Every structure is written in structure tokens, then in C-alpha cells.
Picture (cartoon, rainbow, N blue to C red):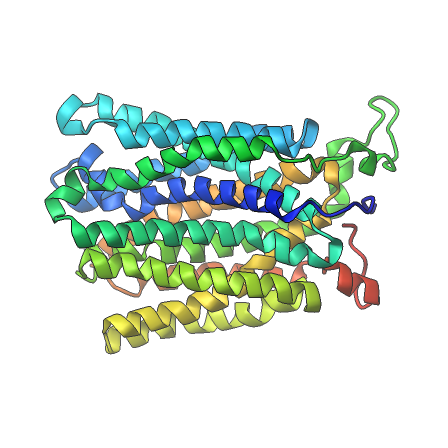
Length: 439
């Protein structure tokens, strides 16, 4: 079932969606980047590692809340429109961001501090869970068919650009503030910066045109009672792409969060200064931004599958050897170099995943299905990655290769799914080289 051809949405509206998406990820991921300081502020314990595990455990709970957000707001995006769902998500994230910035520490108000932080962290998880489905659907629907890969890549580009910005803020703060200042109040600054942007983001999202057009699904054969196919009947032809998309997202999110863990890993396991530690995220996420754009463009030209498979195999076989090389010849530049190469390969292979999943689904179940599949993968596996790595490091006496063996295990699942997922790029389907999957 093909969608009606429509005029692409103007670029400034697409930019507004991308900017809002980036801001939500900036705030949510700042928690991980500044986890060492948040742990001391709200979960102080005699063993810093246990404190950090508790902090990441809370982060995992917020990731699990993304499932609820995906089901509620994602399906809302299919029923009443992408725009209303994105506005609700953005408002909820703004409230969570404000609470993270202003809540006093455990030393000041006692047990109330972690309770407040937990409550609003869960609200942030709900908001972000409801962001991805409507936003990705909007980007795919805003694009001309031959440019869906490029537009869809903006989902990941905005995420990584937000990480780069948060990391640069971390580098700047760790350069100008003393450690006591950073631990005492400096870590709040990134959240306050996000709060300042919220009103602007609400305004520009309110001006967006809607891309959900019910008439595009009018060709669906109705059933006798509802006048439309049931969800189960509608999703059945897309079972393979949904399952492949899930396992690809599992592999992608584990890889991404292993790299996002690098500041904490660099400080607690490698004993590096905070400035160098935050620099690891700048390197990996900055590399991602460039290669995600390239991946989107190439997937429009060559197809989604080939752009996944080649760099996916390279990521699988190079991750552990790359970081083994760093442990044998340790230096800041070796660390940054290994990270840059692996980040480039990983971002190339995983960018087409969410594009393929989104464009393969019919419009009236697109937002909810993408949101739910994405949230399940990210919440169960991505959200637990940093906590699991911290626990495994402690269990193995801080073996520095533990995070990268964990990443490689997830990549095995991802590579298998890359070979199984159907092609969905319109240009490839038009050539007749692969079985058509409705877009």
C-alpha cells in the first residue's frame, strides 16, 4: 500500500523537528554524561561503585518508562497526528529538565532528593519514549521518497549532535571549574541550558504542518466490525521487518551506550582526567554525526541493506582488537583514534535501521509501532548497558576489555538481522532488484 505523493515539507519545519528531538536527547543523555556527579549528589554511599550502579539503575528505570511513553504517545501520533504527540512529549521533557536542574541534594533535604529525582527522571523516560516514533514518522513523511534516507538520518544526527553539545559543555565546565565546584553545582548547568530552550522549542513545534493524512490509508480493506483492518491483521505482513528491526536496534543501542559510557569508563577504570574523559564522547558522537549523514545519503542511492552489512561486519570484527590495541599502547590519541574508527563504522551500519523500519510500515500504525519497537530495544538492552558494564567491571576486577566484549556480543545479533531484513529503499525497489516492501 503506497502513500499518496505529496509535496515535501519545507526545510525550516524539518529543522524545527530535528532541533526539538535533539534537545530532548540532550537532556536525557546529559544524565549519563554527568552520572558520576549526580551519584554523589543524590545517591551517596560508602562505595562509589555501588553509588554509580544505583544511579545507572535509576537511568534504566527511566528507559523502561520509555515503553509506556512509546505506547501512549506513539499510538497517539497515529490517532490524532504527529504534531500533538511531539508537543506533549516536549512539554513533559521540559518539566523533567527543570526538576533535574533545581532539586536540592541528598545532603540538603535528605531522602526527598532522590525521590524527586526518580519521579522526574521517570517522566523524562516517558517523554522520550513518545518522541522517537512521531518524530521519525514525521521526517520520513516530510521527505520525497528518494530522500527518505537523508531525512531519516536526522533522527540519529540530532541525537548525536546533542551528545556532542552536552560533552562540550562537560569539557568546558571541567576546564573552568574545580572538582568541588563541578560536584557541588557545576553539573546542574547543562540542565539549566536546556530549560532556557524549552519555550522556543514549544513555539516552533506548534507551527509545524501535520504529515499524518488519513486518506493515505483509505485503501485498506475494512473488516466487518470496525471498518478497518485490526492492528494484528495490519502488522502481520511486516512481522519479519519488525523483528529484524528490533534486534538491529538492540545491537545499535548497546554499541551506542558502550561509547556513551566512555567518560565514566575513562574516569573510573582508566583514571583519566575529566577533560580527557568528556573528550571521548565528543570524538565518538562528532564522528557519528558525519557518518550518519553519509549513511543516510548512501542508503538512498545503494539501498538500506548493503549500507548496514559492510560496516556492520567491520564493527563486529574490529571492536575488541581495536581496544586491545589501546590497552597495549595506551595514549590519549590512541584512545581517540580507536573510538573514531569504530564510531564511524557503527554509525554507518545502524543509521538505515530506523529508516527501513519506518518506511516499511503503513502510515496509520507507523508512529506507534516504531516507537514501541525502538523503546523495547533501547529500554531493555540499551538502558541496562551502562549498569551491566559497571557491574561486570567490578566482577572482573576492572578488566578494561569487558565493555567491548559486551558490545561484540550484541553485534552478532545485529549482523544476523542485517542479512534477513527486507530491502525498503524506494530507488532499489523501483529497479526490481528486490521484492517490493510497501512504503
